[in-house]
Amino acid sequence: MALAPLPDGPSGLTVAPEPCPQLLLSPRSDNPVPCSNLGAPENPLRQLLVPEEAWEFEVTAFYRGRQVFQQTISRPGVLRLVGPEVGDKTLPGWPITLPDPGVSLTDRGVMGYVRRVLHCLGGGLALWRAGQQLWAQRLGHSHTYWAVGEELLPDSGHGPDGEVPKDKEGSVFDLGPFVADLITFIEGSGRSPRYTLWFCVGESWPQDQPWIKRLVMVKVVPTCLRALLDMARLGGASSLENTVDLHISNSQPLSLTSDQYKAYLQDLVEDMDFQVTGEA
Image 1 (cartoon, rainbow, N blue to C red):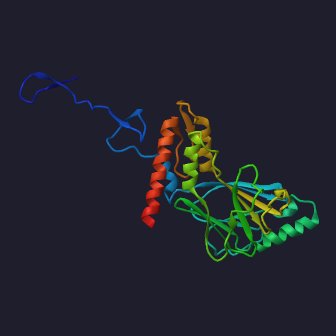
Image 2 (image 1 turned 30 degrees about the vertical axis):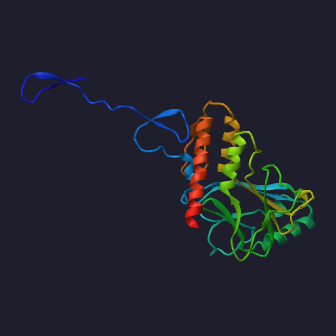
Image 3 (image 1 turned 45 degrees about the horizontal axis):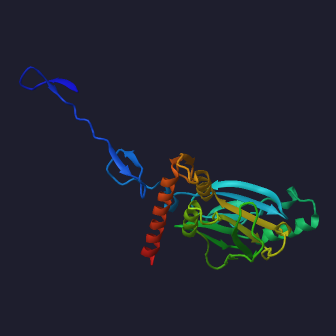
């Protein structure tokens, strides 16, 4: 209520306009949430598909099963795993230098073999994101095999998922199946999806053998995918709010109910299906 003088007479009574609160439903959710405008609510998980947003990667290297390096990188474009020797600085991408084995190993024979593998990395092992997929390419002579496994250890019970190609890029991860498996996991009818990339550099994949016997193993974790799975585990069938940080360049912590989270994941899957159809 506001008292204001009328233009042509004594003071009168006018009612100040008050905006009517708007309620919008989250996608596929029956829980109304206040919204400041009439537009459809933005799915915060769509940031995972924005090319300009840099995913955060946790890179860990092992020499003969011993952890010798770990670094978290959040940069757009190409990441290149390289040896300690100075490589071709004209190549694109952000170099991630693996340490000399003399810092952590004592066996001179093993040191020599590891140094040879690192030297043959040459221009490096390149990894980058394009759309909903992660791609890899080797720029040196060291053959590299890869597999998606558990975060704590690679799955050496079967062969690798593939070999990183040298003359062209090769897909090593697709976000679409991961999100679909995550929805199934939330519904209680599937196992937790895998998101950790393991690379065996310079040797064959350790099938039916202890992976700690391999000279150089590298683990790459997209931390945004770890955060998505952690959110699913925290939420379960509960309606309590849980907070998750996507760990990408422009993300903010999210507070979502389990139903809202599942709805956003389903919406994201539809976005990815549309992209694939459009590109075809």
